[in-house]
Image (cartoon, rainbow, N blue to C red):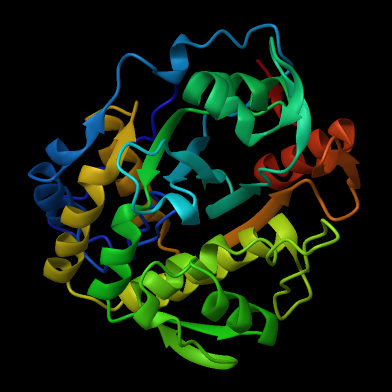
Length: 350
């Protein structure tokens, strides 16, 4: 694994914003000197749940056709949560409600995020073809990673698994985030238990500030309640996207809204958020890797997120398989599209 290089700055301040992407990919920006950021982070990193047992470098992906570049760091980010009807059940298992690849592209000076649709029907090594999120349920983060390497040629430099329980606290801590809801989105949130607390099921059509409970519900919308004929009505975004495409678009919109709120916050306020987030993060990254990646982002001086999703709009077919609505991707087209987005040139074969 290649590490981002640190540059000695002496007393000269590094102008820019820290963009720390953790969980539904959680983006946080602060203006600060690199040395100051590291000083504050040193006392907080210990709150992270470091994972040596399931480290991705223990997964053998040598037989798969992956690409890599020492100046482009890819982190597999998984958001775990309970289903809406299991929110209050003790011992309910967690699921991958969100899967993304966070990319620190030091070659082109860009920050990128690739959303992975959980309804993609793909080959899972040793388990035949199933929906992508089944890989995590069947074999945890290691099988999910092997699946991504096999199907899409994705090579990751580490992973971060985020418990979405912290999402509510973070949104509330910044005073809520702005979102614009369509009629079907507002109706669905007010008529279901996607918003955990009933008293907050009072969202409206149009622009508004969502609190943590409302924002989490908004990020989880996929489709309406099952009808008598067995079909699920669409719940569409303002751009007309539904199902998993709509959900991942909502997650990216909320990510941008959160970044807008926090990038003007003070370092002290930012650290308060870090203390909420870090205990809810599990990762195989080492402390020095986390520091070097953060400092590389500071030196990059950008908070713009370039966004992408798999499968692409023209790279799949929608099919009923069994009783499930699935997205069947064109794996060749998906591999090419991902490589072009992340590497912006022909990648190096591993």
